[in-house]
Image 1 (cartoon, rainbow, N blue to C red):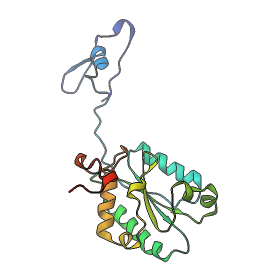
Image 2 (image 1 turned 30 degrees about the vertical axis):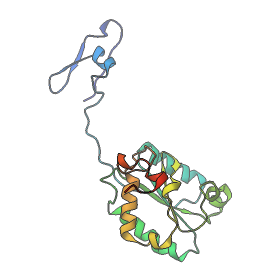
Image 3 (image 1 turned 90 degrees about the vertical axis):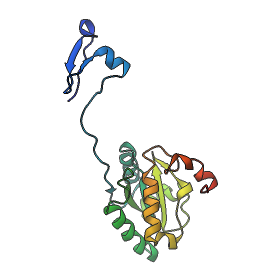
Image 4 (image 1 turned 90 degrees about the horizontal axis):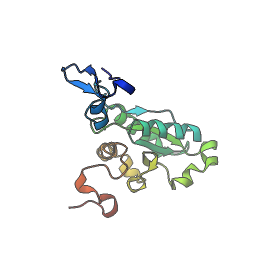
Length: 193
């Protein structure tokens, strides 16, 4: 149920009763006491996007991810990378199976680093991609370089990837290191013991 508030002579008068019978006035609205909507929150779901082959696609996925307050996980690949052919299906399977949804959800796409439009736009240079495969998260359109993964052994490790995805999903568009408030400096100083 949505509430409509009027102005002018009716301002401050009873406008509507909530389903519970509470009266809502413009004064309560101004003080923040009234809710705009009583509709239920929708649980976050992981999103899988098509491979990025140009700058417009990349920016569109960043905006979609940012507007839904979910991190965008990008796997930077090339057509000639054998490790990428192992890592991409594993990551896709984990995201499709719902890893990270309890923590807030994620978006996932591969970036075809050797696509002419991607190379021409200099995306790899912009985000310091110097090897493939590279797993890089974006939160609120900002690259989270402190959690970038380039080690092929880690990228092929299912348990490591599950934990990495869950940690990235905890960001919720707040940038920073995900995880609990006690690990606020973990991105700068490593894990606190």
